[in-house]
Image 1 (cartoon, rainbow, N blue to C red):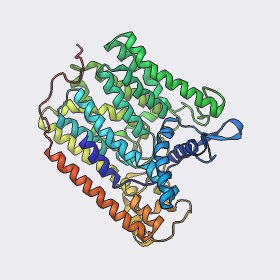
Image 2 (image 1 turned 90 degrees about the vertical axis):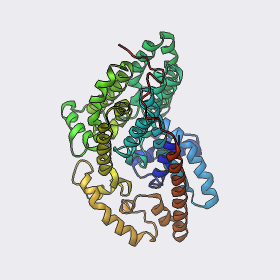
Image 3 (image 1 turned 45 degrees about the vertical axis):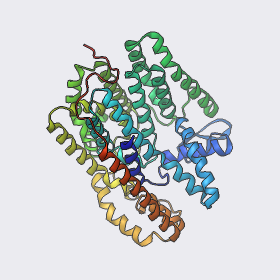
Image 4 (image 1 turned 120 degrees about the vertical axis):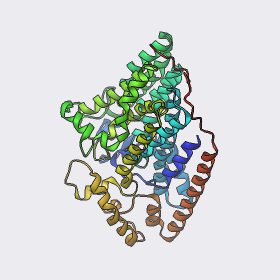
Length: 459
């Protein structure tokens, strides 16, 4: 947990403190409607579709909006005290993502150990995945992927420990957050049955069945039909042949470019296959299904966003196979480290400059890495000269500033905001220092465990 806490604290230093992308605004608006009006209707311009009674509803799953309702309610209370209700509500909702990424580190370490990795190798893989791939920018952008990834990691790990009910609950939450995740039920059901009994598989499927009923009820309440998800404008009409290569190696969305550590996965899979066939089959199947859904989807890019966003729920669990692989010769860790650093370099500018800033002068079908770096000094200078000006609501104005909560606080409150930003940053730095100090004192077992975590070797 200490590694996860340190990760979340470090990411909170660079948190957005607000929600700028339309997908996130749609989820946030639904959370606000749930808390304030006990309803689901939102504004027409927020990634929504027309539904019953002339109202408009988000076309996303209800799960993240329900989760967001809790920090939104807390932000509402804080805002009532400090007089900045909207900013407080957005801030409290936005910090869900860095916290989720901290929990992803914990869950990924746990899954690595279940596969047979040492504590040290598990920590290297988990930290390398969050900081060394394009998952990093999604620790601050408000999309569903971090929450879905966390749920799937827990689901897979619980399944490999033969705890089918808790595995099913985690899968059900993932399905409510991202409806496409329902397609993982046959794979998990087969694993539950193979590792235990048909009765156990049925027990695991029950929570997912409840998620099906909730989704059907929400669809009927919003759009008048249990099978209407609101995606009337998008279909599975992509070209899987061309989209496959675009998703793998294109300069805009290539997985190998945005997550270089994945090039090591085939070797790790081949090595682990001899000892953990059920686990490897599960993780590979999760990736293949996620990749196929994206390749066939009409908007394979996942919108204007960093890297192949829609692949993340398949990619992050799959890299757990690198945990046992890193317990081999020392050169493997050095190679992993180099690739993780390369991945960090690719995504680092997004931590200070919003991807959406490229929309100001967009000439391509997706954000570019070099262009993102070019914008950093320009936006830094603009922020230095204009941070104390009164906040403007001109479209695109927020993308001209450094994309961290400290700048947003200064722009909203002025000098008092600057003092609060410095104080808050110092508190986070102090907490991070304590966590890192605690980490250096933790004994990390560097010996590769045997058949740990209840995973039965399959011949």
